[in-house]
Amino acid sequence: MGQRVARCCARDRQRHRRLRRLDKVALDWPPRQVPPLLIGARGPKTLALAGEVADGLVLDAGISPDGVRRAIATAAASRPHEVAVYVQCAAGPGARERVLAGLSDTGDR
Image (cartoon, rainbow, N blue to C red; front, side, top):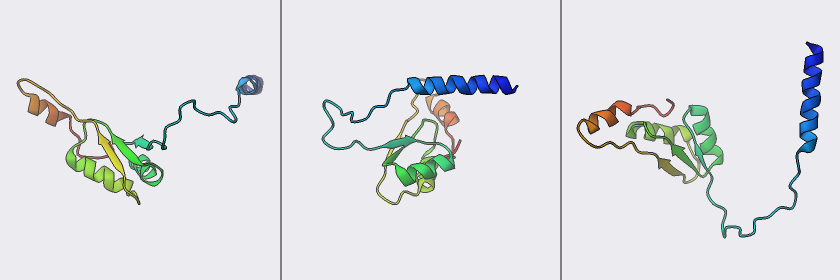
């Protein structure tokens, strides 16, 4: 067992040496201002982290309006936050029921 671990560690060191450092790298056409950082989050820990370090949240489809409110409250951002939510849609007979069946009332599915 010890030899296998040693071989794995040696391979990892070799891979690490092949990595290239990118110092003093710049974009050819940088944006005029830094774009906002939005974090996709579901669980309470990730929502709280997003509220602390990000400029906004991305919430996936399947979350109800109450779930969106709870997710925003859980993020507890100390500054204005953007919130993007994917919205479920359906068409045809039974569309409303299909969408409602897919919604979750929690922000942490």
